[in-house]
Image (tube, rainbow, N blue to C red; front, side, top):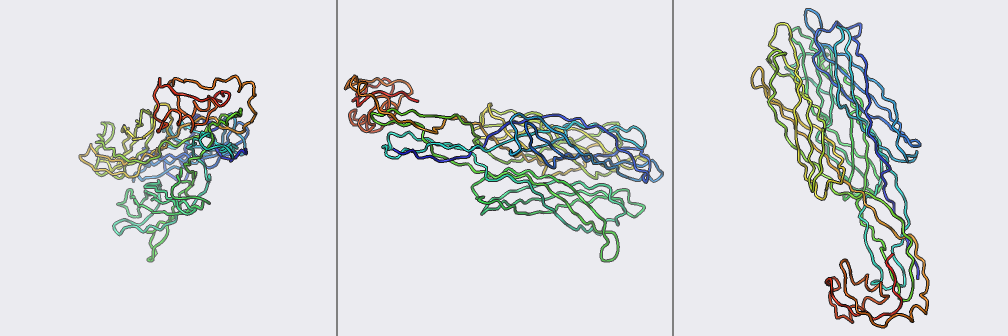
Length: 525
C-alpha cells in the first residue's frame, strides 16, 4: 500500500485592522494671490501609495491632497485656489505579520471640516480611516489516495477554495489633449482639475488582465475675457491597458483597485497660437489580485480489512468565495437651498462623495446604508456674491443580492459614483442624480481537517477471534453504509449484497442490517 500525496497552497487571512487618523493643519494663501472673501468649494483626496510589511506591523505611506476654491476680496471678485499635499507616513500593529506577506491598505476620509481663520488662512481637520489586511499562502501536503486499496474503502471529499495566482502593484499613465469648444474663452489660469475613474471593467484571458474604463475629468479655469468669471470643461477620457499575469484564464476572478495618483494639467497654444489646449497627464495606481476558485479532491477517511489505520490529521482554514458581483443604482434627490445662501442663476457643477455608514448581511442579501456628501457650485443671484456653493447630505439604501451570504460573513464592498447629472428647477431647487456602483465580494472562512499521514498495523488475531460472526445492526441518525462497513471491518459490497440493497444512499433510521464480521471493529478517526 502506497500513500499518494499532493501539495496545495491555501490562502490565509493573517489579520485585519482599522484605525482612525486625525490630520489637522492650515492652508495658507500664497503671497502672489489676493485675500479671501468667501470660501466656495473644496476638493479632498486621500490615497495609500505603498505599504511594507514588517514583524507584527505594516508601514504605509500616502498623501492627503486638498484644494480650496475661493472668491477674492477685490473689486473684480476673482476666483482663486489654494492647494496642499500632505504626506502620510505611519504604521499599524498587526500580530502575525512578517515581511514576506501580501498586505493591502485602503484609506477613506470619513469626515473633514474647513474653517476660515482669516482672509489668508483656512484650517482643516480630517478624520481618515485606514484599513489594513495581511494574507499569506500556506503550503500543505495531504494524502489524496492509497494505492492498492479498493476505491469503495476510500472516502473522498473536495475542498472548494480560492487560490491566488498573482498579487501585483503597478501604475499606468493616461495622456490626452483637450481642445476648448469654440464658445469657450481662452484659458488664463487653470483653477482646479478633478479626476475620477468611472465605468471600470476588468477582463481576464490568455495570461493577461485587461483594465478599461473612463477617467472623468472636470477642469475649472479663468478665461482671458473680462466677462468670464469662471469656466469649466467636463470630459471623459477612455483608458485601456493590459497587465500580464502568467496563467490567468477567463474563468478566474480579479480584485482590482484603481486610484488617481497624480493629475497634471498644462496650458498649451493651439495652431493659431491661442491658449485653448489642455495637455493632460494622469497617473493611475493599480492594486491587482488574480485568483481562481478550484475544487481539490482529498481523502477524508479510509479503512482496510483486518488492518488498523491511524490517520494523522491537521486542522486548516481557507477562504471560500461565496459571491462576487457588481450592481448599480440611481439616487435622485431635489436639493433645496437654505436661506443662508443666495438663489441660483445657473448651476456650474455638482459633485458627490459617497460613503458607507452601515452594512448588514442577512440570508442571501446585503443591506448597505450610507450617504452622498453633495456640493453644488453655482452662479448666484446676488450683487455681492457672484458665485456661491451649497452643501448637503443625500442618504441612500441599497439591497444587494448575494446568494449564499449569511449574517456570519463580513462582505467587502467598495462604492463609487459613475455618473452625475443635475437639472435646475427653480432658483432655490435643483434635482441631482447620482449613479452609484457597488462592487461586492463575500468570502467565508472554511475549516477542515486534512490527512497528512497514515500509519498501518495488523489487527491482533486474538481480537479477530473474539468477534461475533454475525451482527444485527439498527441504523442510527447520521449513519451511512460506508461508516457502518468501516466500523465492522467488512467490505461495502458484501454489506450491500447480504442486505439486498440496490441504492446505498437510501437507508432509513431504525433499519435492521445484517453484518458479516470479517474482523475487528475500527473507530472513526
